[in-house]
Image (tube, rainbow, N blue to C red; front, side):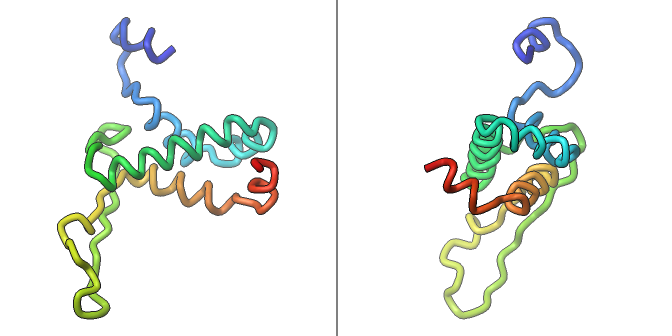
Length: 118
């Protein structure tokens, strides 16, 4: 569907990761019902959110999922002398929907999920 939309120049952002984290952020109750029924979807969501956060951390992705999306900027503070070795890398900017989706995934995590994955 995404490839079709891109080929036909359908208006919208067709970044798969952005679609996933925007969906989880906006419709988390529905997504968790689906994740409970389909563990493969849960695994996909966790993988997508993790990979997307890593790409922002390593600064390989600066493309936000939705035009004019709100960003969250994490700025380090020194609690002790030498606590931050590389301040330039320590600052992190991510789309708010991505951060929200990660928080939603963490808040719904259960110990049984780890046991089922083993």
